[in-house]
Image (cartoon, rainbow, N blue to C red; front, top):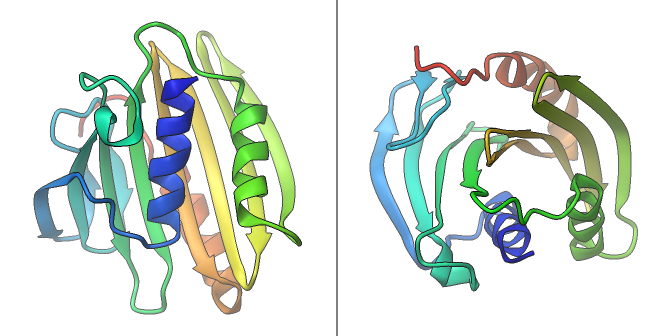
Length: 180
């Protein structure tokens, strides 16, 4: 449960463009291209410049040994793309449905959860969903594999929904466990 709270807290803060207080910026202003966070186990194609960062779990009440690895960037029109890896060595993560419900609850009255889809390939499970509230939209893809959780996020102003939807398709489909 602590890892779920960590994941929700970190991504929600980043999703709302808040700067977490215990971040370590590994690289900033990295040109567009394939991104692999420092010490991460995935890569994803960023169509925009990005930064590579890490967050220790003790800053959110999880174990100090838990480190979240993330890459994130924002377009000039306010669309933020993020991909994060959160280890779960003891299989303590709550169900993804709980994660979705908590995010919706944090967005408050009027938040809408939609477009939930699920995929399974061997031991890898993925859930995609959308959230909307207060003039902002969020596309999520949560992937669980090999005692880790990966969260892909596209956050956008509603005025940029069409562009964000196009970016989401290419961004989400470029995710890979193998480094380029």
